[in-house]
Length: 401
Image (cartoon, rainbow, N blue to C red):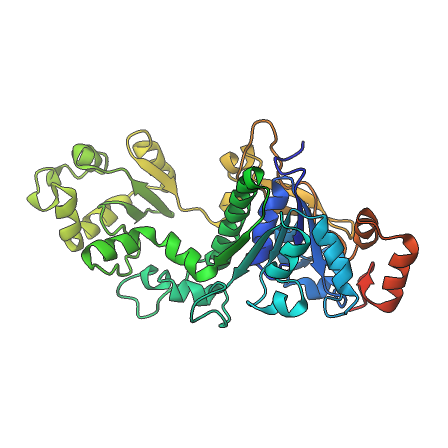
């Protein structure tokens, strides 16, 4: 079924992860995303492995559903091709270093003269302005500079830890998609596009909202808390006899019930633990008591015992998540065809819409698969396309690895 963005055309210059993740969201919601790829493109050059059915799973996962055009952006003749595509586009997405698109002749100020209604989204490490504008960044850099790593891991561990997945990249992709959608809504009223400027570092600062507001309000600097929450106790992970569980929702009003469920009635009147602040203050004494109680039973036992009274869930491995009945009942894992003839399972969109659901429906295209068709759509004749192919400006097949 069509998604809500079915009539939106996106010209996608993104690469790596942050940019493609943002345009992937638009594609999942039904947008017609036309991905620009370099003339030397091959499947092996598209991205990292593992390679399944001779396809980069890294590239496939965030470029599903997009159409592929091979264009030599440095060729003088490429400008007219891009300008023709821009005139036919609602949105342009790019995540080159600031200034790169300007040097190529495809900056926002240049392209808005061709298409004033164009929503032009730039995703970069530090944004289009500021003292760090020209510095490069990848996921681990913005996790570090945005404060995330300083709060991740155990307090007594000499080694800090980054998040286990690329939140530095993917957060900026999410905010880019939000920015594009906001600009499209505004355009419906004004008729004009605008430049959406999203920084990976800004995105991390935004996601650090709770530690940041506490610091700005009180001067407190959150340390690494390990399994715990900085304010609520207990609100954390606990070891069981065969795994770990996450437990939350233990309040002063149900603290005695919690102790009873754990077989710790002797601590019901213990003044060290009567309130949340006292439990946080006296946590070094409380932790071994709770850990010892939880270790006496299994994950499934504790789920049965505490569910319905407190918030509890198992600490799943990725394999556990892949077979979780809730995840699968929500169609969060879908199998998509590869252009080489196989299939790869990917995570679906979490956005569920009742009338125009969208979702991941097509795999990543063959490099250059749609070059000829898309140029025909914007007015190029067969002879002119053939001439561009023969001159190397555009491509319809990947070159050999």
